[in-house]
Image (cartoon, rainbow, N blue to C red):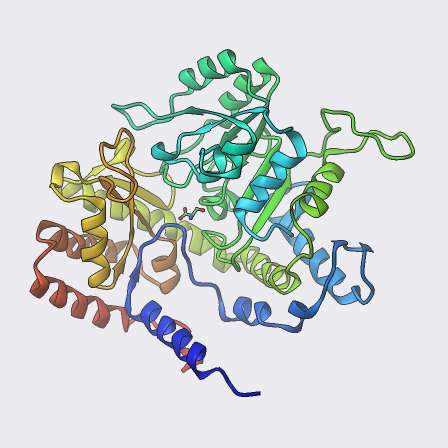
Length: 426
Ligand code: DSN
């Protein structure tokens, strides 16, 4: 068969783009070469509906071993009783939890998308806001911190069946204990979506949600640095709240209900090649090297946030406890859209992001979200952060100055040559 030079040439250019730039998108990272190798393997050819030892297809002996390894390693990382590694993405992990515990029309309470939440936490344009009745809590206008009192007040008013915590653009720690108290007071279950900070939680650098939240979902490709995909965890398995019975009349544990929600509830055949790559990345996470990496993420984020503040930038909530920060650009007279465009032209990749109480649309926005997991993987340390902020500041002060954009791009490209990415790929 003819080799597809066209698509491989595009992939090659993407490698070059990744190599020469400063990747500051908070949700992105660079997997190890072995994670990528595990992803591109013959398991993509295999159908394996079901779970290890209980499949609807023959020939699953090898994928059973690989999926079981992924499950066991994830259990070890997070110290949990139940893991499902089949969700194709974080969105499907969240859909599966909702499928497991909600009926259409049930009420859910999540963080408002415009305050840092996620589409799958009840946005009206998403399945979560269409199938269920969404309600939202937010952050305080002055402090930028989650308003737990308001969360409680809304929970008492609407009595949601599921409270969703976790965010895509919130830089502070979560008070899981308080959320559990609120949930218990209205008889709600809790889903914590830790897609962003999962790697820091795995290493004890942020509070763990498992003692308080009934379900924890994550993606595997952000701070966890694995292949693109999702995962569901339950800290301690429990009897399902709806008393679903097996044909033998047994009450099913939540783990069984959750397995059935992922398959056949939301998905068909699992992506066993991606699950193999998840297993590889989980082994990496268990290493001391990854522990050092996670600690470096925190140092880099702290250093970057200080550098922004010293240049007069307003970080929502005043700083960061995790790997990212949301910068409100309203005092800098530049929109998120304009900022993103100028930075991207200089090979500094960020995303425009709405800030709490934004007066601009999601297409324009008043802010940018900046994260350090990817540059930390490249090998950058806290001492490099002020220079990055210097470049960003130069561009945002004069976003239409093409000469400046060009000189910063040259400096960025030269700088990144010190931090080789996938040298094995030539
Ligand atoms: N799109 C992801 C992010 O950038 O945070 C969340 O799904």
